[in-house]
Length: 351
Ligand SMILES: [Ca+2]
Ligand SMILES: [Ca+2]
Image (cartoon, rainbow, N blue to C red):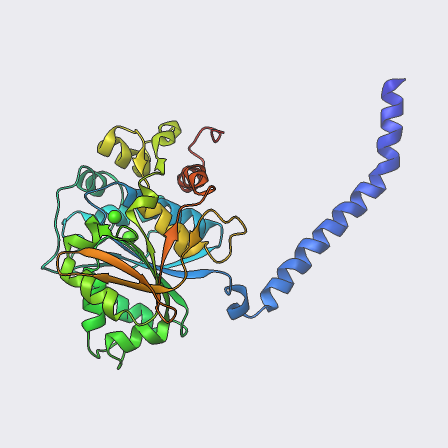
């Protein structure tokens, strides 16, 4: 009896189901056709064009930041134009290529700093470079300053966000660069024409002395004084209080993201200076969740020793990030994004 009733009901609704299927197929097809006819410039308007500049080597939050950037690219919030290395560690470039490969983007252009460069020993770069697939060849690699010029010259005006999570050495060389095969413009003019904003993890606010700025203090002082467009700082005091990474224990494979944290601190939590800068560079303008605030405009100065100071000034191009009652929640946001980047090889996300 029950069975008969069920069969009858199914028979009654089956024409409805097939027309529903038909409507669904038509909707999906027309959405696809509609998408094809939207000009590419409009489609990509919301996608931030990003160049990341990292000292990936001495600390592991750079690896976390690369993961976060890939996760945001997967969500179509960022387009990764290229990644520059400011560290002189000879394994940094291949480690980065291995990470990009593991996140499904093996061909992201990588530019590496030429000597002289700030160099530190890393707990993970050599292992990642030697044990995970990557194909960055030392002969083909462009100097970061050349890759910056090549990429910027090919982009729409005022469209590129540069996110610096290491030393400002590459940007110093970019600003000082002259015309070349990629562009007839000098570096500063090229930046002014193509770059929308620089986000810099560096400094301590309102004043202090921080690693990224004092490691190559001459470069920091030069770049901060002459950068011709908007410059946002994510200071030491923000990322210091956001501890992430321990949840990577739950990744079931030997993913190089997990392996880097394992080699660095045996998968305990680490401060998240660099991931915060990526969030400021990619989602600050579009996110409905105000996890932090920025100051009004002002001027940051960096002296010859790498000390930074701040003064408010309406015409200044600089701002810095302010901690709010919601900022602590970035811990969860960052852990989730790092998880997402590592893909399906994970247990369900922890709450
Ligand atoms: Ca590659
Ligand atoms: Ca860094």
